[in-house]
Length: 107
Image (cartoon, rainbow, N blue to C red; front, side):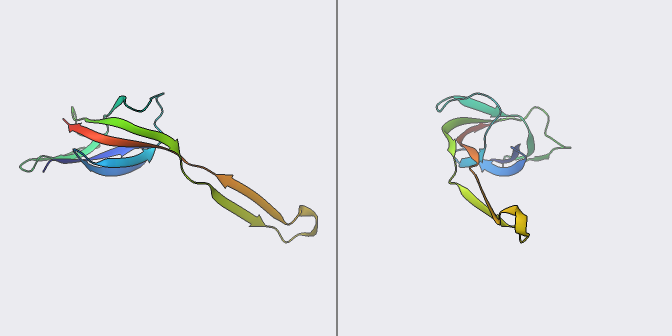
């Protein structure tokens, strides 16, 4: 079974052809159905030969198709300050942007 380890959005993912992964929002302006190429391949294994990059494998790339682009559920952050003049509670929220991709080829 062929698999690879790629770096995308500051994280590392172990992928094989047909896998679906969720990565942080990609810097390019892409739409669902378009293809994207990950060129930062850290490790590539085809079952008989394993290539380990220093830091990346030269000439290796992973191709994927974008399935969905969106935002995750909101994470509520609440902070309490015990001083008298600060107003007590402060509420904030964050929604992480993500990209769901399906791996189509490892080359």
